[in-house]
Amino acid sequence: MAQDHSHPHPHQPDLEETPLTHYQAMTEAVGQLLIEKGVISGEELRAVLEQIDSKSPAAGARMVARAWMDDDFKARMLADVNKAAEEMGIDAGTIPIRAVENTEAVHNVIVCTLCSCYPRNLIGLPPDWYKARSYRSRTVREPRVVLTEFGTTIPDAVEVRVHDSTADLRYMVLPARPAGSEGLDEAALADLVTRDCMIGVTLPKTPDL
Amino acid sequence: MLRRHHDMGGLDAGPVDPFGPGAEHDYAPWEKKVDAILRLVSDQKRQIMTVDELRRGIEELGPGVYDELSYYERWIASVTNILIEKGVIEIEELGRRMAEITDAWPAGGVAEAEPKTAGDLS
Amino acid sequence: MTARFEIGARVAVRAAYPPGHVRTPFFVRGKTGVVTEILGPYRNPEALAYGRSGDPALPLYRILFRTAELWDGYEGSSGDTTVVDIYENWLSSAEA
Image (tube, rainbow over all chains, first blue to last red):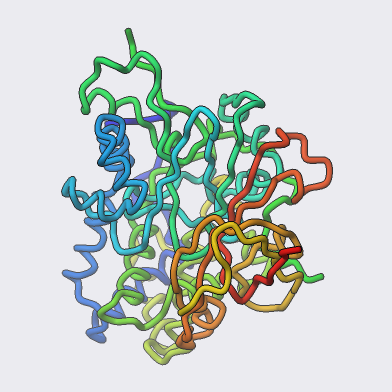
């Protein structure tokens, strides 16, 4: 599976050792009351939680790799990500997802300045930095500076196109296939595709030659 | 010209620091539960509320609370308010149930929120 | 739903600052861009946000802006662009 960060996540202590916060208690209480009132069932809640856990950048990476291999698939993916996902047995949910393609002339970056809209039904929940004030504020105003903070430099001749996804669609980047990946099969190509390159803040990994 | 606090495109802010300690965290079970509750009460079957109402409710928390709460704390605050407004749950029963849950919890409860990650400061 | 603007049309975003839930980001209000795509009808989120039906649905457009026209002293490349999805009730024609 494509993983694009190697730093450790903060340690989470065993749940029972930590005092419950006000909002944790609220979440538990609301869940219990909704079940008791028959608004939702425990089974439905469990099923949705499992669905949330089943989403990961790997699904998006598989689609990108397929698009790199197959121009017809790429055209269908650019037209309708949800439908193209279905072809591959991937459930991308009902909120329309659009892919924007990086080319030699254009580099795309996704942000949501009003909240934190993200194609979560395809690639899972967003990283915290995506929801942070610094990313949401600055990406529209100085995208190239923000990109350098991710270690990404885009040549001046290439247009940086920022997509503020604040309405009814969700956006992902279809990155350009990296040089040197010619001989690779679909699975090996998918390994080059990271979550961050589908947000547009980095480029895909380069193959080990 | 009224610019609302959540509408932050173009404002000054610090570096993103995508590799810093607050850049990512593994979502806790309670955070996923908030997400799941919202998905269920807004789904096609129930249509009790919309994601648009969720967003409006988050924005109405006001600048102070918005910045103080973490991402999913804002969500559950908004979802709960809207469910009360719509008569799906009652304030009294919610308060009682929260107290019962906290009392039964081995480590008890605190009024304050968890330490913040970068995303929580948005 | 008939979309009022065609692909390629120059449009101006309303310079309005109402209170309440608004789906057009502050930084594009009063700016001019070009329609690159008509995404279809979507129920009005500014009504949905208050528990109303959101009908009639509004055409939703992708509007492309030159980033350098959005910000004083933009330091990126002059070719850089910004795309924002905007509902028709926020747009007026800016054709000469």
